[in-house]
Amino acid sequence: MKRIILCADDYGQNSAISQAIVELLKENRLSATSCLVTSPEWQTHAQWLEPFKNTADIGLHFNLTEGPLLTTLNKAATPLTKLILQANLRQPHKKDIITELNAQIDQFTAALGQPPHYIDGHQHVHQFPVIRDALLEVYEQRLRQYNAYIRCTYTAGSLLHFHQIAYLKQLIIQLAGGLRFKQALIQRKIPHNTSFAGIYAFEHADRYPELFSCFLDHINDGGMVMTHPGLKDSENDIISHARYNEYHYFSSSQFMDDLSKSNICLTRFQE
Image 1 (tube, helix red, strand yellow):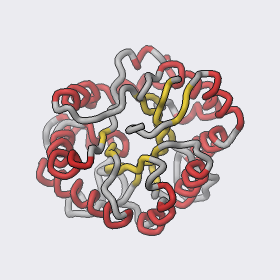
Image 2 (spheres, rainbow, N blue to C red):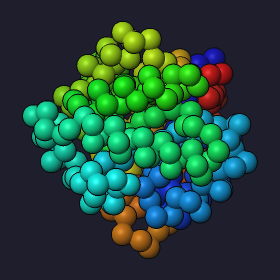
Image 3 (spheres, one colour):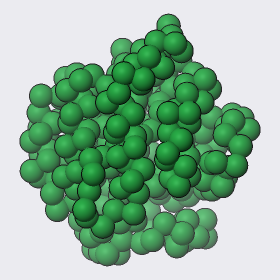
């Protein structure tokens, strides 16, 4: 039996996303969710997670690229492509990143009464140069004592698995520091998932059941599959169609059949 962490990203971003994730958690069709604590709806949505604090991994989705941030660090956030360039040029100040990360951990902890079980990055910012150094420093100061883990997006050979459907996304993520970050996690003996899957081009969301089967084929025991479920949404969310397709699949009997056929069960990281 292969055990995987099935993680829903963007909890707290809007009601359609949070409600979908809550419904899937109720049915034990997810084992983790990553929270955007910079969202104006976070305080309300955090209360909906109360029943799942001991049954699912609830993590911080560290955000630097969308909406207002919590500190004076680029208050309006920095678009992803610009942040990748800035990080690779070592332009962000590590001290500013540390201040924002601490503020987001504080926001998470105040709302849920506990620190995050793990940390990852919205749009994978946590592995970028400078930002990863800030994260590793804060981890040692605040999270190692709780045995929190960190999402690792690097899997050897991942560029070969999904052909053109996700090749560009995979390439960007790995060039933005995926391998270097994994090496740092290993060197520092920081707990992390063994492998990673779930990346695809959202315009192919109508093929999601087929794509998810591919994820299951290539994920290792102890790996994490990233997902983005959501209910039908009238808000300005450019991937709402993909979110609903994912939610529909995870709510279906086909999803359970696919897990069974692949001899896979959902688990929390520490289990």
